[in-house]
Length: 109
Image (cartoon, rainbow, N blue to C red; front, side, top):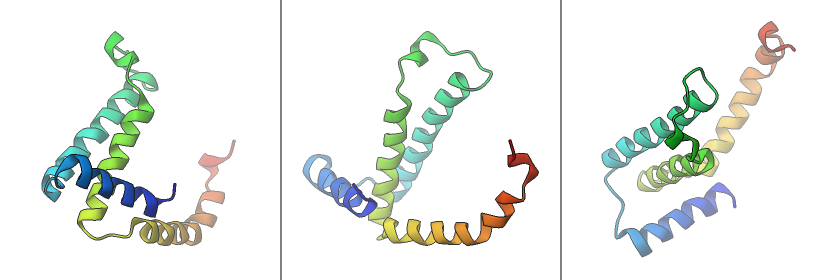
């Protein structure tokens, strides 16, 4: 599924199951909450913090999908074609960062 189709799928879900979109401010707060859940898993699973027994059952993929869902809601609400924005950003980053990353001694193995 591409980003355009994902935005359409989220919009259909909202209209079928969600009644309406939450406000942009509510969704921004929800996005922050979901990113926090991703951060908690990563900090405990891949960082120095110990992982609680309850954290071990959390699915990182599911939490990342929650972030994506809310992000797609925000894009829909603000009339952003996220596919076009992402494609443009990828081109900008490829042109701007190609030499910088290749010349970064910290990235050499």
